[in-house]
Length: 172
Image 1 (tube, rainbow, N blue to C red):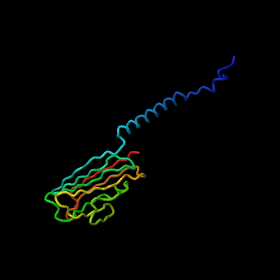
Image 2: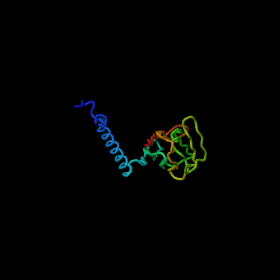
Image 3: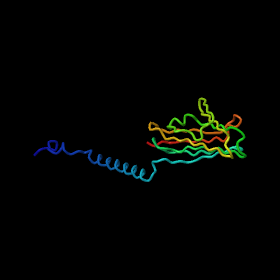
């Protein structure tokens, strides 16, 4: 009679087979969760808005707080001033935030624009009424992976007023 080490079946049996089957089940379950999340629309663009009021000024920003590369996203700023705008309106935005976007332009176009090390400054002619709405037409660059954050505020006599902070997180 042969010993157990001399069995013809000893090299056929794989002790890792149950572990590999378990890993396959986990991988399939993860794939099913991702597909169901996509079908439910949970992996698309999620937008929100933030508002800050400072004296006669109010700044509101609608932005994507969750997005994916390649998708169109909302980014709209509304500046409100009680009593209307007595002159040009300058809006400042964190420049680095826009690195994640491929820009199609601003609507309306600013009358002038400039920048310093951290902010873009857009100056608009005073609109009629008490509201100026700026729409940034953009989509997330395909190469963007992490997202970004920034702030927007209106300049009043050179001082920032009604600062609103925002962040966009990018899903893979």
